[in-house]
Image: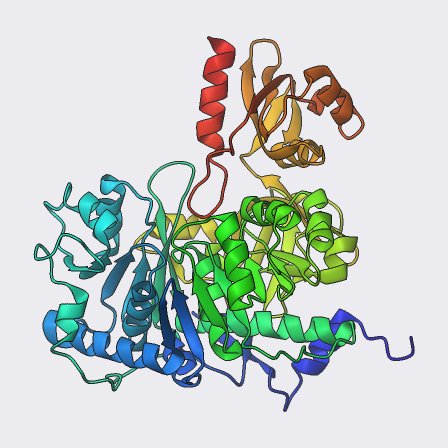
Length: 559
């Protein structure tokens, strides 16, 4: 085709001088990087530039427009200042289900320069206490489930609690009652600066306490514009015109807002697109299909387990899911077969995914549509606002296709872990690259392939076996829905390969090993296989609890 254009050419054209997505050389936290000349520099800018009467939040029978939400957030901000003395830099924790109040509290806090602490709503009481103390939170917005937990450890916690949708009236001030005395819907001044810290999102490490990831306003708004730019470039490359809809674009919020996928890719990315956010109390594939039909949902982003559920629901439901145009993923790679299933199971929806971290504000690489179907094992190519490289143990950059540690730097990379100077010294190189802890390679065309976590290896007789590679092979089996691979201690070889998988049918072990022998070298085929009829346990952000699964399996093997 005479007018064909490459992705790099499209990105260069769209980000050139004078264009809406113009990129210039700048610095974030003193690190040289590329920043957008136009667009919002703070979250307050983002909120104020997108006030409208379009529907913003739908939760069960409740609906709020963008304007109503902003005015409500302004009332909350005025209340926090006058009743609790909240000022710029103060930490305000939010711990609840995906209620509208989560979004309102976040907007109120960040618009006045406070730091929103997005607490994991599945934390137990001790973990909640740790997060509140570690962040030094001044205030906590919490629903009944979280209030019940915090009451068990309230001694020593300085944060004052505001209850949201709580049955237990009176013990803590109720948000709605507090707002009765605060009708001023003008957002207080002053607002934040671009490099002021906006959020603390806690990472769930495999060992020790979680760490608070401190990101500034510009980190986050740059990530949002970076996704937009990638989308525009994709349409230019594929010569696709923006779709003309007879209804408001809408997205289904089924992942938790405390996770960067929920807060950034779903919630915050909706502002400039004027998307309607339809929030679910908890994940239910049948209800999801009903909401997609009723609310004319156009996009859905979630971990592989949930998108897999929706694929299965699409095959058996009579619901009209034809408005769904994209099914995005993240958090963990999809099995190549699921990528194809998404394309085959929906009338219009094309699959997409990407690689990113809480520390990069969820952006990093991306891939979607036909490109994803052609490269189903890849996490895509790097966003133009960041750089990635793969290095060896000495920190030397490796050539294409060679495996090593993935590193990233750019304008969306966080400032550092909250109050953790030792961890920051370990994670950043002297020239500003962040060590991701992922083992990866980049091919000749720039496609990223995540192989494993650095410590997620089985070392069998001196041979390193990537757990992710074995999991991918298991997931190619049509009857296996989820899989987790781990090391099992072995007296002779040091470690053997073990695997636990979820299947709704009984599988013959010898047939499964024969199936794997066509995909893996013999030494990589699991010696220990555990089958179960229920989904594997996961964190709230969708990551499989590999450590827990391994401990259970090893105990069974060694008993």
